[in-house]
Length: 390
Image (cartoon, one colour):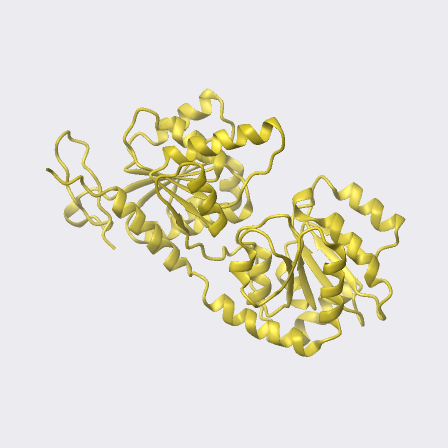
């Protein structure tokens, strides 16, 4: 892959590879991160690592806490602490960090808006990746559409992590919107599911799931995750023998509300908070459950299919194209459909085994980290080529 850049002298353009032969300076990119989701932060770290390995200079502008968690310097990138705030000081810091950039790549709506403001008046190409979509109602929804339109029109290329995000970018006026190749970020310690005798008993005993089915869900405890509907469905499982145990790993603003319901209705559900052994817990589960109102490339869905854990998920956003026929899909908000799907799978070990096999085949077709970096570099190459003379 050859990555071209413009020299800074007026009227002169030189092409150099990303590996900088003969001492010529390499392409310099700035990755702008708002410190949002774990998936986008891990993606930026993976992308930075791959770009640096190919000779590209990478600066990551992100909040200090994001660097403490993801250690961008550890993969060879320079980290410039820029708060998530959109105040003038933060925009000025970002503008300074982008001063010598050949290209700026922002991740997420708010990071992209700040990058567009920082690049105002400059000809530096802006690439934007939309990893998820924001939700709003009323006047906030109108403001959100305006922000999305501003970002979509400012970007030379918008990369969407699912087809509906690409369509959304086009509807907001993007000149060029494409489906992004995004590899599964390595967020958790991988687990060898082929050794269940070692993994399952310990994890299941700790959770109280010895001799009973274990259902697993992972994600922040907020309304977008659909946990209220999940608890509604859990009422139906109480009539099963043995009674399945649903374990939800994560923290968030709904914890108190959910815990009260669990206790008041005596539901077979445990909230275990944030865990650093989610991979082991998931590998020990009989089913993984994803009940969100919208997802693009759900990490839980990807990890479940990789681990051969049958998945029941809502048919929303990018989930259907991500999992294909390797999961049971149900409508969002339909507790009865969710409960029926879970009961049917628990009664059908052959179907669970088949979904596990299909999951591995589906996962094998997802982009690798190398393919992700290759696609991004091809976009950078397009945008940093010289304009042909008439």
